[in-house]
Amino acid sequence: MEDEKILVDNNKTNDINDSERELGTKDIKSLFVHYSIVTFWGMLAQAIMVICEGIIIGNALGRSGLATISIVMPLETLNLALGTGIGLGVSSLAAIKLGDGDKEGARKCFSTVFWFTAIIMIIFSALVYINAEAIAIAFGSPESLIGECVIFIKTFMIGLPFCVLGQVIGAVLRVDEKPGIASFAMGAASLAALAILYYSVMVLKIGILGAGIYYGCTLGLSFLAIFYFLFSKSTLFKIHFSDLKIDFSMVFGSLKIAFPYIAYQLIYFIYTLVVNNLLGTDESGIHLAAFGVLNSYIVYTILIFTQTMSNGMQPIASYNYGAKRRDRLLELLKTSIGIHMVVLIALNVLVLIFAPSIIKIFAVGDEQLIETGSLVIRVYTGLSCLGFTAYFISCYYQAIEKIKKSVLMGTSRYILAIPFMFILFNMFGIMGVWCSQLIADAIAFIIAFVLVLKDMRRMKV
Image 1 (cartoon, one colour):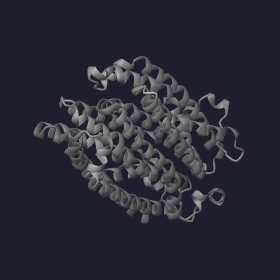
Image 2 (cartoon, helix red, strand yellow; image 1 turned 180 degrees about the vertical axis):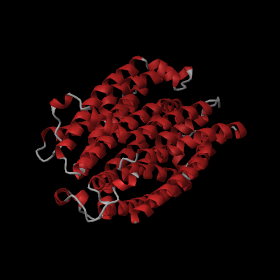
Image 3 (tube, one colour; image 1 turned 120 degrees about the vertical axis):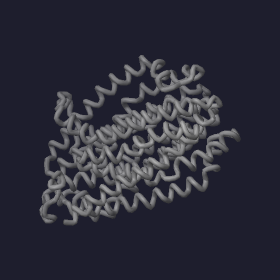
Image 4 (cartoon, helix red, strand yellow; image 1 turned 90 degrees about the vertical axis):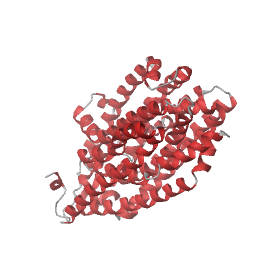
């Protein structure tokens, strides 16, 4: 009866915390919209950065540059899995503790997980750096691109620890009711990284090395927001060196909440490897380049909107779950899912209408890539609004520690797509790979909608 944990009298609240923090007092709809919009400005800068990145790389490095980015994209997926996942985990646990009135527990949770993450990421990045060539081959790199992939991997690994920690810091800033600082840090880092990319590949002409430096800076520069937690007198989330003595109960508690997002990105990691290998059977490389544009830029940009609203919803959900405010959780579910659906449907329609114009931005006069890319964009993203809504719902369950439901909804979009890819590939060739996502998105949405509707009916009782 896990639902009984929050099925309590709506009038039973934590008076001390509700009187102090807007997460427990302000109107749910306005609070969700405010946190989402403030977060959106930082994410918008990142979306612009991603689009401009594709234009710059497409113009400076051509089809081989786009293919290289597609091959090494699992590392960026891993970056997001660890950074966003751990960030969601530690910020959710800290928000739950705040809602329950445990301020020191919330502070210590952030500090000890911060140090643990720093240590682990330095070790991990060093191991990947040393084995860069073997990893490039495992990612499906053709022999002609192994050298380029190795340069990218080694360069990116230098910045990876800062990228992951930057995302963790941003998540905790939102729980500290400072979404504006988090948004500014992300936006400023994105724009600075884009300037670095342009100068390195267009002016210095250092090729894929410039792309590696850029990827290390995109989120890595947002790490500089650490100075807020070191020197601000207003924050309760102080980082203490004494917390280097790791409290593993808090680490495991954060990782438990983080697991759904990490699982989502892990499945996506495997999914990307499968797609790269199936599309790699086309010797022209046209489908692999199209996937590089689609996966690295178009789908990534759509996901940014979902992630923005997830980041806006998460601290509200976690805080009110800790404060045992079932009424506010129910209102948050209705409001956030409705707004998310409207935004994603609008994006979906725009992508379907303007697919040829979108691919032309990246294809740089490659008519074959423009023709193929226009078709696969429309097929692959046809029902993405449904698949990403299932993912958005999973983020709500993650924020309130319902891990099994969160994992199921969050990973279903890709777990379902992988077997369909093999089946349809054997039946229809490469186009079967693209069509598999349509089926997976529809089924994932049905599963998520049925489960959340069932829970909402329970919460009304």
